[in-house]
Image (cartoon, rainbow, N blue to C red; front, side, top):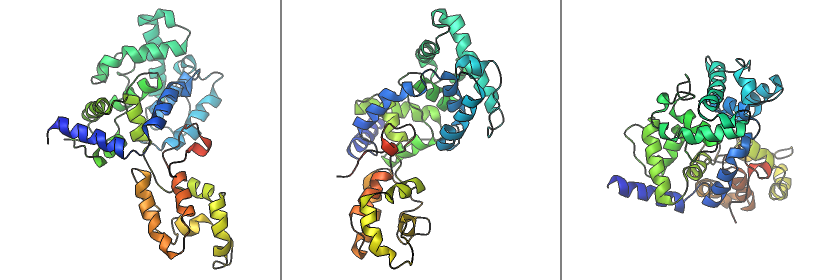
Length: 316
């Protein structure tokens, strides 16, 4: 199969079996730039800290720690000194400071009209940096900063308003699950070129595809189990079931790490796969409403999503 034919096949697979539908991914892409509006220092902290770290920790601990340490979480506040943020790895704090300083230096040297307006600065830089996306170290303002490789460079551009995709190992994995093949799946440039081709074949922007791929993770989490316990479907089932436990039934008794049924610890690329596993158990008396409700709560990834509990209904 030719490379072009394979790309088209991957595009069709993503459109036919999306973990995150194009419509939802498009909404998320439109909101992506505004996530750090008037907080562009925090944006840089987020980007640098996101490397090889659970994003939940970045969003709930690292960024808030930075914002508590400064009066205004803008580029100037970050650029004027190396931040003291608990939990950072060696070199990350320096990279944050240097990246913020680089963006301000870009404004001074290349776009003086944007000085004193972080929103204009980051948007102008994101556009300026487009030709450097495959040769990031040659970009003199942010790409040359140690700790910022092609994936973080793309992520910063995305947060700053560019149409780009962060081709990290997760994106490569999801593309492979839909039929992509790579010489080296850890080669960010190779995966980026492939992903851009897939986005073009799908007729969507790079950022929309990024949201489809990056958020495309369906798995049972403790948060999902906590939310399941609050639902009518669970309450209707749990009352009778509790009689067999000598205590109030909890979702973890069924679907948790030591639960009675399959599902915990497994990751799926779209809700249908998770549903297939959970549905195996309905013959034993589990009412369908419970696993259907659980699937609705288990994905996609929820960071910064604008829906209650980060969810929208995915099963009818």
